[in-house]
Length: 265
Image (cartoon, rainbow, N blue to C red):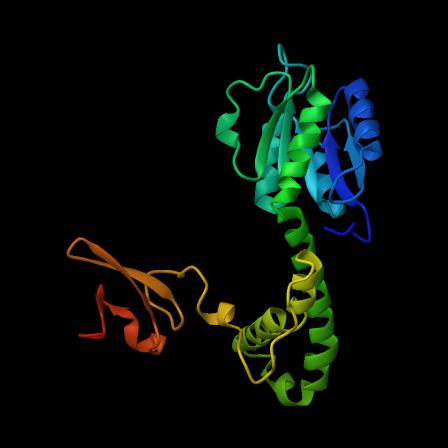
């Protein structure tokens, strides 16, 4: 993937000064396949969350124990939990005592032990996370959201204020704005993101008179009630069949636990 216009931002939380300095210098001098990185580091677990919030972070390397494994508390796990509740970026837990931490790991939370070969392993896990395209997709969506909201407020809302301004006292006003923004967000500018993340792919925005199939047919169902465009699976007599919902959703809502429709093809 082509290098990003700005370096990828890695937050590094480590309370041992020598380790923090060594890792920071190593990563900023490393040549990654996805581009250059810059490291924003801190030795304070208490100030870590503020660092993550104020910077546009693409990945976090997080020490686990405050003050050493023998006497320290798992301050890094508290930071991880707070980060999951307030923001998003993949995380690498970086510790001299990795035992017992697998429950905190997953596709976007990796575990690297300090010690011999540590820097090479860090590089490997960083490359692996960027190979998933999650940091790239997250940054692209975030930037697209900012641009869409800016253009929407200065464009659609300002241009149509005479027509919609009289609704501002009604609670439905926010639903109107959000629904209209969601339509613009999903259609305008997405093609540029596709071309940025998947060079060579055909990613132009759809014709205004047409709808891209992904907008309606390739999405996980939301909730129990069937929605127009859902792809769902019906299990009957030991066999599973997939079907596409092409009927208006309002007729398929459950009433007292039973679908309003008595029969369906």
